[in-house]
Image (cartoon, rainbow, N blue to C red; front, top):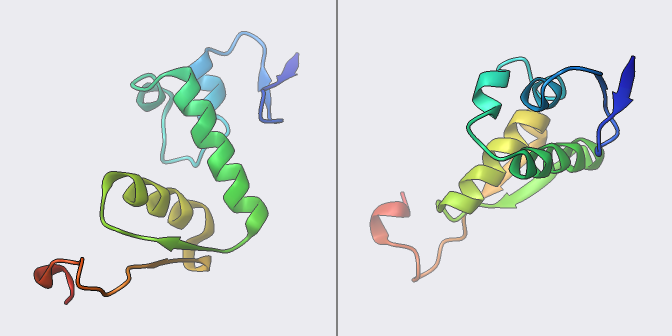
Length: 99
């Protein structure tokens, strides 16, 4: 019997939380990798992935920090060439990062 997850995907009853989440992610991500983060974080990532798929294309403001790197990684994974990451060139950007 299949049940719906909070993000609308169906998973088999009896599947562990990591297995259920991994079933909704790209094949390159395993249930073992899902176990390293909280179920709440995994659910948020699934929601982000679903949002990108719904948008079909995205422009990500990329600062090089952890947050924008993560968003850029997810966008590129879901949208491929339809995800564009940009960094603004300003005096606040270190000179070695401008090349």
